Length: 622
Ligand code: ADP
Image (cartoon, rainbow, N blue to C red; front, side, top):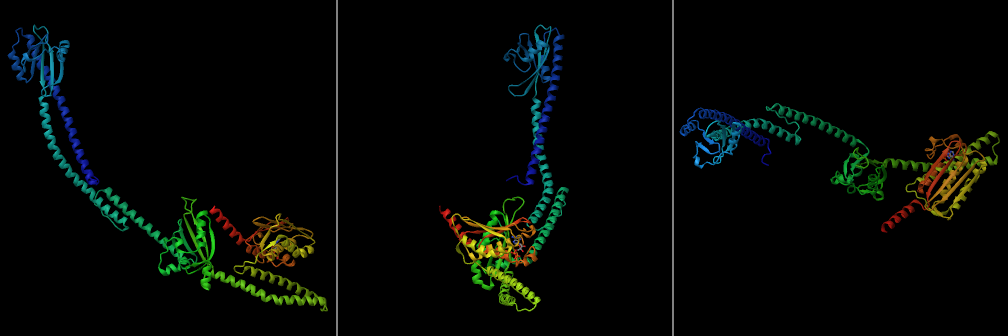
């Protein structure tokens, strides 16, 4: 582009302004001159016409052509004399024989009517304006009108000389103004150029760059403002950099691994712990981690699965998986053995204010659970071992004390009483040990008990049998109701389910007054089995509802103990239901009663999953 720079634009503008100014002055001057010239010419013509008319009027003698001729030449004016019929009697510039009748000329007609008239026409030869002044001559035998006319020749001369002056002036003025413009524009563009150079440096990140201008104040101010901006920017960048460093240091000092993913699951940020826990192999081989999709960096369907879920539903998801080198899950457990790490991974969605409904990023937090799991395993093993070791001596104590009581050997009452206490406590301990052993066996890793298709009625019968003693002790009635019109069987470990339901029923009987009623209600549906144990007993306080499934938690410890409770019954229920893939819940009101609900998948959760998967495949294929 030709006129892109300030310099060329200003130069063009100056040249246009100069030319326009000169042109307009030329037009104004020409117009003023022609107006003045017309005015003076008309006055001159009027004076001469008056003079001629007087001459014609006062002399009775006929007018002498030669005199008029000489007069016309002396005043450089054309004189025309016309009679009443419009015939030209005399013309100082033309032969009257060549002239036509003038009666209908505008100024002649007007003069005949009003005495004096003027008009202006363009000469047919020179195309110059010709001014006419006509006056009527009254009381003359032959002459009717005296007309004087003059061509405005001076106008052309004036215009020519002005044009010459204009062209010369334009050249001088344009040169002068160009010189001045170039000088002043250079004064302006030089500092601008300096500002541009320093702005380029700022753009390249050289924020320390300075510029000293001697130019116009406005540009000096601009340069100052730019420098201040650069200074502020530098400060902000330093602040940002230091807070970024702080964040990095903080992230790196966390024992928890943190990975930030974008919406397409590309890895944006990782901290030291995450690199150590998840990407050891990549680090050793020097493969990049940042900017790589998570699906390329790790081969864990569980982790990728929870990220996908979070992206879809915008909620947090959690998973626990084993990890060894680049392996995850079962394979890692098998290959890595003791070196395998157990990782708990939580995916949290990140939303930004602009788009609250869409997950923009995901934060993955990774916790190394290996040590915790190991300690838990040690604890479980310890409890199992201790329970196992205690079982025999406690059984012996309970058995022998019972024999002593029955043989009535103690000779005094207090020995008898002590023996009874020993026996009761030993029985309590025996129950605790048995419960602990059962819990331990349920807790064993991958505990999935043997399951068989079992008739619901058989389970109910065994529960009734197991709880009869308690119902009789309390003089309470224990009723059962089974809703199973199709007589469906359920895939469970019958012994464990009987244990769980018996625990619930015994509790219901224990924590109800004597002569009360407990109902076991079982509904068998196509997919699930719902078991409800309903009592009208003491109920459970609201704040205890969430805790009763914890080990050794009792609302009223003394009462529980006096009733032979171990504090482990509900914990066992929860575990049994858990290994069957079901849920247990409770609704209770103090003084009104409680309802414990156990929901189990009818065909066991593994089978159910298989069924679901095959159903979905079948649907897809259709
Ligand atoms: P416990 O051996 O003490 O019965 P559980 O684990 O079976 O231990 O129960 C925990 C506590 O929950 C009990 O101590 C009791 O306070 C409360 N609880 C359990 N079932 C009921 C019930 N049906 N009604 C009222 N309280 C109950």
